[in-house]
Image (cartoon, rainbow, N blue to C red):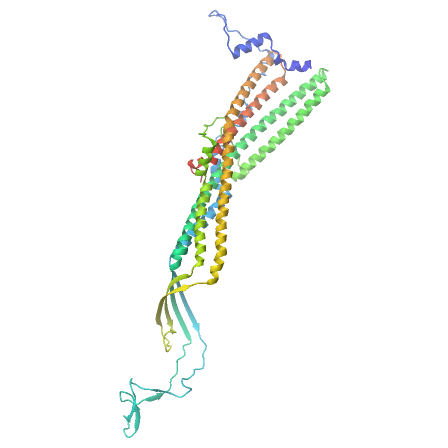
Length: 524
């Protein structure tokens, strides 16, 4: 026990060194010295080279590098390569196509067709059971009189005095038929019951997906920023874990030396060996966490393994804290600003219009139509002749498929159920955002006290290291005690790093939770 007390000799400072330490920390009144007197000095002894200030290993490992990853860079790369964003953008393209299709529904339907038909020959029938057909050249009553060419004979004469004659009559067969037709249908009832509602539904759906795409971009950018912070924190934890291993090995070397000099026990050596093993386990776990954090960042950014990632965020700098009203005001701000909620509202408007389109099935259809036919032969021309004739028709058609009325009952229920589901999803989304805001608000509230406590811890560790260095320099300390003090300072700095990372992360989360990140430069 005495041996360990000697190693921790900084707990019992010599009176002269304590006076010097206190004087350096808080200057006291000194008697006046002659102008030519030299200032008092203290010989630090043989350990003075070992106690020179060393660079902060955390500051070196986490220093900002030229071209390193900043929040803006990480967000931009993540959005550019995000599969989730690309999927939403593809949905948006489909919605834009649906708007174009809905626009076309306002136009009358024009149908053009052309056909050629080859007919087989058929046996021609006769009129009246055979023979010829009796015919007159002039209209009017017929009578009996002398034949014009032979007055001695009597003939049947028409009103013009010409004889009525019997002729054979056959219809020509046209075996090649060619037709060109154009039909125009005007959906009169659809203009009031379907087309306008379908267009509005497609338009609201497009607006909804535009908001969903931007919301996904902001979410992806936020995930990338948080991944950068977690990666930096993991790198800092590796530095501290490695120093813990070095410090434990230094303690083990001292314990073995004391044991060899018969000033320590085997139990002390075994206890410190267990400490070394625990420190090595912690370092291995920290390095594994660093690899996982880096790979997660690479997955989000979709960056190849050959690219060297560098730090571009000064996490040890204290960022400006955003305005922080009450949590209820923040929740109300989030409900107003979050694109996910606004997208849901637009989607509901789309579903309401689709309900109207579905309910139009209860009513009959009213269509106007017009047709033009140019055919050789034209079936409306009698008798058929091998030539092109044009005909046309125009009209109004009222159609009511009775079965559609009953099927519409089920379709209307399905449409209303989809709207009800969306309402429930919106309420669940608001609850989720409310919890997100509450968590970010709480994290931001505790970030400032954590940083203040971490700063006090760093100041205490720095003062402890300063005193330990002085003790070691004059030969009243051990290298293990010095390593302990250096490690304690590094651990305190890691706590400060974690507090600053927490503050950065809280700000990023609060900006996203409240929708304030919409006001930033668009992430494309």
